[in-house]
Image 1: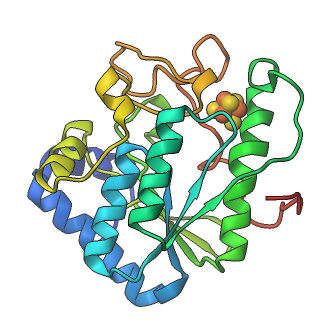
Image 2: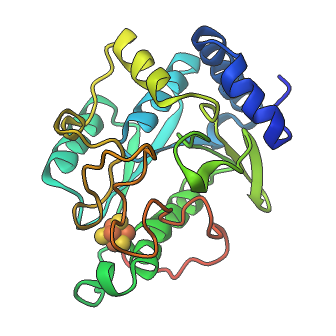
Amino acid sequence: MQATKTRENLAALVEGLNFAQKVDRSLALIREAHQEYGDRLVVANSLGKDSVAVWHLARRVSPDIKGFIVTTRFKPAQTVEFMKQEVARYPELRVFKNDAPIPDELYLTDPDRCCDVLKVQPVRWAIEEMNVACWVTGLRCTEGRTRTDYQEIEERDKGLIKLNPILLWHEREVWQYLALNSVPVNPLYAQGYRSLGCAPCTRIASDQNERAGRWVGTSKCGGECGIHTRPLKGESTGAAH
Ligand code: SF4
């Protein structure tokens, strides 16, 4: 498997590969990484459509692959319920959450800090506790302005590989895969959401940008929580979880 190396290469593959070729490519990427990293390959699951697609792909490679979910005190009730259903279906999914006190409405005054405490920190814990050498994400390069510069295989943190096996998929292809494989999804999608996060920071949007409903009205609008941009090793605070 020759992973993508350049932005041009990436764009050509996004448009040049058909759905079945992309599925095969994703499975091959996970299979090769699993052969290399074994138990130290772990799937991150945000409970969004991309994550459940990647989780399904990973289980096709090996039902022994483990995963983790990061949740926060601000997740919508439907997402919490969906999480409980997913964990009941797949007990190999571990849940990480930071219950440390934070200032009221930090998501309004400093959403970057709020995401760092509630989302990025639990990812760091998961990586440390599960002894992860390669984490697998549902990141896609067509999701919006902040997601065009990634690669299928990355090493942003030394000693920690990040695999983005559906990087080349269009939104439509994710839904195609989920429908064809009867994969259950978060019920919030039926209300019109296209990208899901915490309740105070997620709206239904009609913009072309898939992530336009995230952090509306802040400088972070359409942006990132930080798990794909912040360091994930060596910054653990050791707070309760
Ligand atoms: S999405 Fe909003 S509420 Fe959730 S952690 Fe980030 S800033 Fe806080």
